[in-house]
Amino acid sequence: MFSEKDFISKPFSTTIENGSFQWSAPSNIALVKYWGKKENQIPANPSISFTLNHCKTITKLAFTKKQSDGNFSFDLLFEGKPKEDFKPKIQKFLERIEIYCPYLTAYNFTIDTENTFPHSSGIASSASGMAALSMNIMSLEKALNPNMTEDYFYQKASFLARLGSGSACRSVKGSVVVWGKHAEIEDSSDLFGVEFSSNIHTNFKNYQDTILLVDKGEKQVSSTVGHDLMHNHPFAEQRFAQAHQNLSIIKTVLETGNLDEFIKIVESEALTLHAMMMTSLPYFILMKPNTLEIINRIWSYRSKTKIPVCFTLDAGANVHVLYPENVREAVLQFIKDELVGFCQNGNYICDTIGTGAIKIL
Ligand code: DP6
Image (cartoon, rainbow, N blue to C red; front, top):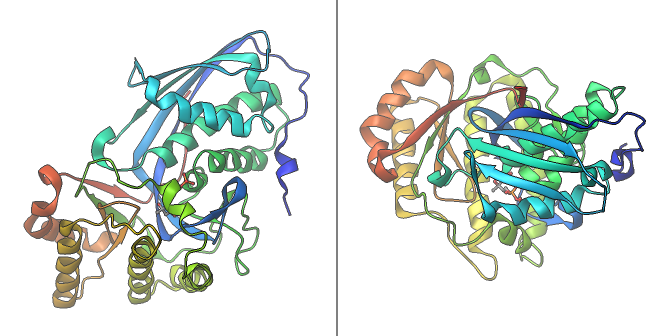
């Protein structure tokens, strides 16, 4: 069992004057959702996600040694230009991880970041962004401590990413990732994401996720506020218990390839997530009329064609359309014929299951 203390780095004998690293980290889409958390970014229930492939953040971290005065020093560039409004979030993240990475105050950093998806697409970049930054920080730590094992490298990267944004810890390594202690998932932890280790049925190989961009606007309620509203939520305990059960079921589904059962769990999880929002106090709705139109179209297409296509939702109005690779052509045609009209400016993004963060430099 790991504890937080295992991630506090010891003083290093190596020093490095300057250098740079670059990593890409993908977004991920949860099948069983994380919604509700305890102190220090500990999830109220376990979650499981597919890692995406094309939607990612690419971040370069350049560093030069400075006098360690206990303060963080960094410049933040987004697509090559200074971006002041991203700085407070990064500052907060660095403060949160300082105890685990005390060496960070000994450097001046330039963080240069960009996304492969449009910034204003309504696709959250916090998961991929925090994961990409954490990978770079771990590359620096590994340079300072060359004996670090590969397992520790990825575990601590996920641990740090979690402190930036909970779901980011599932964007580090593996195609299917579990975060949060679950009785039937060996080595699962509240502290970091773990790769789902069972054999995944071929039905899920190259599973497709087409993200329909329904609403690109700023969300009225942030995920952080939403998580908070699970405290004293009338259905919280039942919801957390249900997430454990759904994870047990989806574990078997991923092993056996039972797509009907997959669809049931995934759609129920999406609607439950939004039901939690609608039944919190204050209550709120993030779905838009077009979100519902799309869901209804998917349901009637599925019942008419028997093609195993389903939807899931994040904390927003966009719809993730999930389906096996072997029905790709038919489903893309359906999306073009029937769903594109409900997307803002007809925009959607085709993605598939990926494998996690990649070192570029
Ligand atoms: C609905 O990870 O964005 O996407 O930890 O406050 O940064 P913070 O929240 P965040 O919440 C994601 C919630 C979700 C479900 C999920 O990805 O599991």
